[in-house]
Image 1 (tube, rainbow, N blue to C red):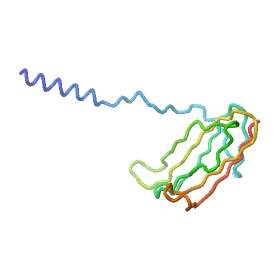
Image 2 (tube, rainbow, N blue to C red; image 1 turned 30 degrees about the vertical axis):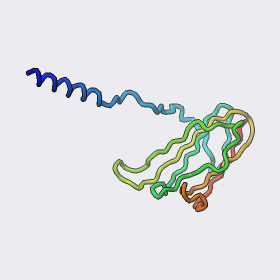
Image 3 (spheres, helix red, strand yellow; image 1 turned 120 degrees about the vertical axis):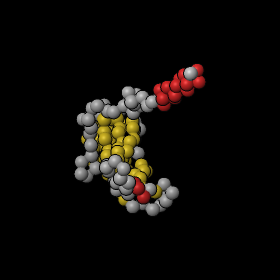
Length: 138
């Protein structure tokens, strides 16, 4: 009986120690979805304090291609606050496109530009696409 109690205690200890805490999430969602986004020409108009979202659908992420910032916005005008990816496929299905999402905070008035290139990190000279964005902060 003593042996059974010991095994039961070990099992319960293991069970509760391994239980995933679903209430703690280290990534906090941004609740304000009033983002300033680029227009079809890549122009972004924002005010000081606005959050700017650049969201690009990457259809080649499963082949190792990712958007890389080659010329960033002027750091006195805006600041990168986060980068995330968003899987667009059904659960369990590999190879679906991925959204790449950059969030910037407009800090001061001015104008700046950002250039991104789509390439594999081990083949930086094999660029398959380029995107440019022009930011104006009032």
